[in-house]
Length: 225
Image (cartoon, rainbow, N blue to C red; front, side, top):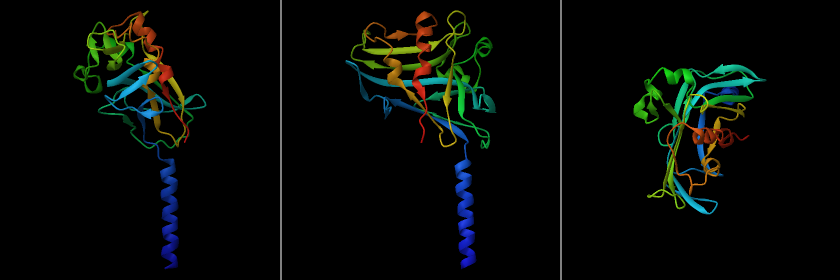
């Protein structure tokens, strides 16, 4: 009985240590301020009431770093995150190396864009591709606003563009520790930068899209557990 007890304690300890060292992917969590984002739920935004019907974006070139040096690079170059379909990115192995930050890009780089439409997450069927000339949509958010100037009180922001001077690819660097695997995406921060009464639609590359892309670095964040 005593022997079995020590075996149980040993196995429990091994399991605990293994679980503490397990890091096999990252989870994106769309939020509205401090609460989980719910599709079609009405939220207050300053003196407006808005709801979100769609949120999709590309995450590319994911690197885990320690003291500025890359210790792990995700197996795929680009991943499509969709609030209604996929929010998690699984890595190809358990990451045992220590790291203190994560670096990734929001969007698709110019080389991939000039290669034309591809398959998988980059397949045009996903609704994130304009044409060979305009390329991929890096970030898409749609919904409704009581203040929107559109006929149906809706808004559509499809942010993309890879040609100078209207590139929209943005690099995000966030602190990340082993006891974290969640990256929050605050949609309220994005919409707070826009006067929906005056601007309710951006659907092509240009100055407006480039300005919106600069907001990406403000809406992604991590929290310590």
